[in-house]
Image (cartoon, rainbow, N blue to C red):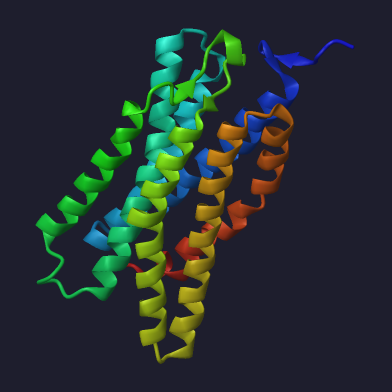
Length: 238
């Protein structure tokens, strides 16, 4: 039985990239605009940057989906993943600003956190044969175990664990129940993004078409949860 194709792409892959992941990209860009429209103070910039980097990563993912030039596809795939990972750093700095006194987390410290995290993530490029995406993989990303492990170690221990730790600290300091409730929504949204990060990384390492499609469908409901990051704190930013 012939495989159904749309624009030269298998139907399941078309659904995965242009429908499901496309929805994520549009959602992230819209949320970035919604936050920055409320004002351009530092907290707004960091939270909107989280959404913006994620959204741009999703758009780049759609751009290279039908390309067949190995070097270009490799570069664009890496850029997509890099932006999705680096987006997490903006949330970390956002949380740190909320909990740390301004004299201990000045602009230089914030830039240092962003720079160190960005450089460590660039270390992914140094892993031999970390990403294979060419004719042999049917132009779908296939990661080496080393690439996967390095990414998980950096994102988990440098970004995700500190973000969770300080977010819980902030929650414990709230005495107002309404504020606690709002921060719970924020935490739910964060965990939804972490869920997406780990699931996507595992999917690219497993390199199974069936799992990729199942994962895309499973991840779709997290759009609602990702809105909770904005609902929890973004609406209060002025």
